[in-house]
Image: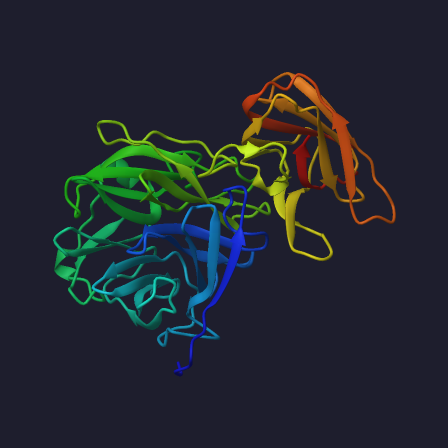
Length: 437
């Protein structure tokens, strides 16, 4: 690794929907969220770029002051190529975590290989660039997490199949191998897949992780609670399950964090009918008096209010898919765009939640020019009352189609939206966006 000048590229974007929080064509998974001294929320995650392998060789950083408008700091850390900061391998970068102590931000990273390696890089800025990656000897697995307790003692969590924890030495780059222990109870170890994340809330310690107690795949974020950072942690159940986000959804990985008096769960959803191409999402969460967390559903609105039905709703904001349908990049000629593609007869897309006024009379839908089929529109549940149908017809020599349809019986208020598609087996149907009027 040679020494080079590092330049950060920060891209600002404004979004009207909260889920997913990354723009079309950008896939950031395994979101580890932290609120630092400046009051902003930062997300450190892995970045998917190919269906042939997990993740990539670079980390981006997301940051926000309101959970609506996001900055993306590209290439904040790399293990290969431009801005390479790892001189002991050129392997991919899996899920990271970050910590702050005494004016320094620490990025904890991990990589596959023989053996798997974990390491840490540092910066004076929460966006990076993170430099001078060093290996953490004694931790040979994946998915690091770090907690700095109230007394200043730091703890390092990692592992796949079974989690481990050890005390970090004061330099924040070495673990005390004599303290390595397995912190989860028996039930938690059965549910644990990978992806440790750790928080202290009051006097309790929360270990969040990818949970495979359902579906025989780790689509859940589960959690366990303990009175000591070294455990034992008692398994308490599931915070969120992303199983219906995509036909090929395989895993989940994320964290919980408090922002402006509200706690949130940060997780990812798959796209493109792939185990990869995952996108970071957010949902508010709520605690019971005994410290347990209620399970929450995936939504399109995320951290914000219900979506305004009269503003454009991007098709890729669907929070539930049924059938062959998937979210993927669509051909929009002059810009990167995503939407609903590969739709089969009777497939369904769900949007939670939309806000309707008492003067909603119709809907318009943007589709690809070759699209043909019918969209059935229902509110509140998949078998709810049909409020209208939109017939989509193909056109030649146009870049796209806009189809409109009058609707009836839309009650003012908050509703879940269910779109069911009817089409012939060989016809195409690709949805870009829709809005009500």
